[in-house]
Image: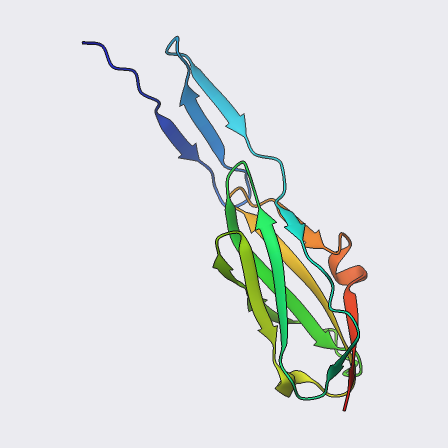
Length: 142
């Protein structure tokens, strides 16, 4: 009895996309390179948030090719004058990724934030599209 099967080999290194090598039905090796970034769907935080209260962030992140590796939340307080962003790895439940901007990080004014998703081939996507240079923003008030 002849049985058919698919053999997949993942090849990659730190700065290169992962290549998937498959054997087609004729026994020939076929290499595929994932160059597509993950897709991020996120509804920006609207309105004014309460000073000192945690703010939950949620996004749906998918990657049909190599799969999602990490999803990060980057945020900073607008009045700090600091160029440093706080970085949080979001927790996955299926395709839904969530995390929290701690209320203890509020210093008044507002919060700038963006989401970054990285797939297993090291392709990155941002929400909003320009990430750090044009982040989401919400106000903080007592």
